[in-house]
Image (cartoon, rainbow, N blue to C red; front, side, top):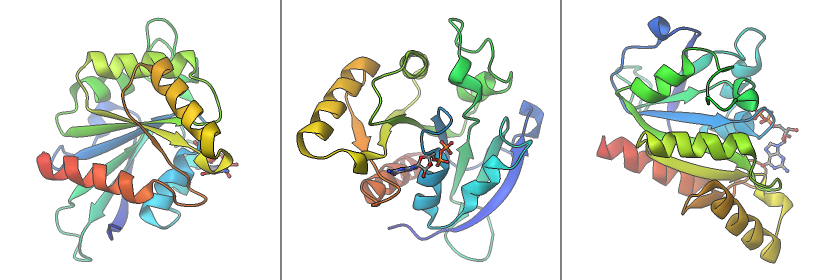
Length: 199
Ligand code: GDP
């Protein structure tokens, strides 16, 4: 599993506050309570994403720099933790109630290498997630759908949930993960590092 030194960079609530675009960025998207903080913490092996539930930061994009050495020179990868509450309300125009800077981030960010869309494996495809997946596909963004809380399902239940979510969201791949058992975490790191190397 990847070993990085992680540094919280900043919380942005406006495009002018985004860090300089320099290294491949991985965006994490998902409704509140989907398990986004837990998954990021499982990836980083610590409590970094707790910062995202700090009041005032929940409607911001929180950026984390991942360094392969402790020197804190140029990071190798940046994680962008996108607000979860905003698009629980995505309306037909996808972003009507989204903070205004989210859509420009997804549409224009030159270093955005992978969008990790989190959906709860225990919940059928939701309208908002379907819209988000099709929005990202429409923009040609490389997207990976991660099914969270996979530990709550087993055997046929997991296979069935995975098949139904893929078909509901219109995607070919879904990676079942669990922050609790760490299932899927090595595979998720592999996907992240692959796009990091390609970029
Ligand atoms: P966020 O709002 O998307 O950041 O979600 P959190 O990470 O705070 O998790 C929301 C709830 O789901 C919490 O009660 C977590 O304990 C629970 N949860 C998160 N990940 C998992 C998981 O992998 N398995 C199980 N069983 N519960 C999880």
